[in-house]
Image (cartoon, rainbow, N blue to C red; front, top):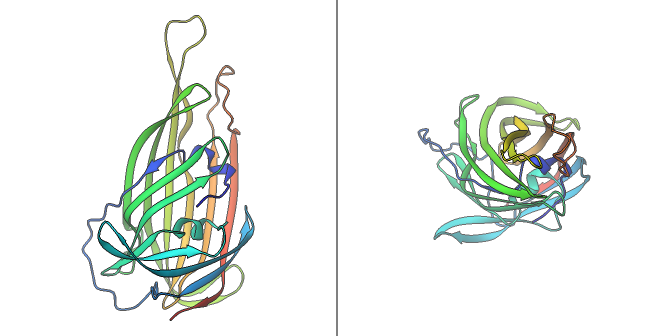
Amino acid sequence: MKTNYALLLLGFLFLSCSSDNTSEDIPSATNYYPSGTGNFWVYDVEGTPVGRDSLYISGDTLINSVAYKRFKTKMQPVGFYSNSLNKNGVRKSEDKLLVSGTIGLNFTDQFPLTISISDFTAFKESASPNEVLGTVSGSFQQNVQGYPLTIEYTFTSKAVGSLASFTSPNNDVYTDVKSVNTILNVKISTIYQPQGVPISIPVTILPAQDVIVSTQYYAKNIGVVHTNTDMHYQLASLPVQVQLPIPSSGDQNQKEFLDTYQIN
């Protein structure tokens, strides 16, 4: 599952994520993500890139001996949301929606990305506003054109709130809607050794910042009806000797609108 997001060059070189949620579970009284086999959702995607995604539940699958519903797309997805679920497993636990699998992004030919997630909490119906649903932090190293980059990250899902009525930017209206933010914060640094100098100098390439903030809107008995994703970064001022194939800044927005759907 790959797509091109040039703006994500700074954020995702390789991540391995798992969920962390210690909140008390409360049984769900309603259904914000119908998970019947054959259910499908078709999204119009605006921004970068542009396209149309058809996301559907293909059937059951086992991951580490646990039953999940397998999500797929009919064609290569372009939207951030559909791309994040394609070929992954989703299951419900109490009033939570848990996602397991891998997400592959190839935002440039030189820098592939793989994110592995295990029961990451994407949604919780009983969550309070600003409640953190899941978070994971870590670091890894990647060599880029001879520079040993250290990438530190924090990946978080957070409840935003509930809306009795929600009007999507395309003017579609939905009732009983809950929204969730998924946020990726990244810091990138390296070690630079000037020619002829027997010391190494630490260099911050990307100060810690939220490079992705994506908001999903879940409507009762439908699922996700709209996703708004902002992707932004700003590099630090680098020594002229440090040359990386990364633009100094980037700013993109992508919107995904539900067009048609079927719930079995």
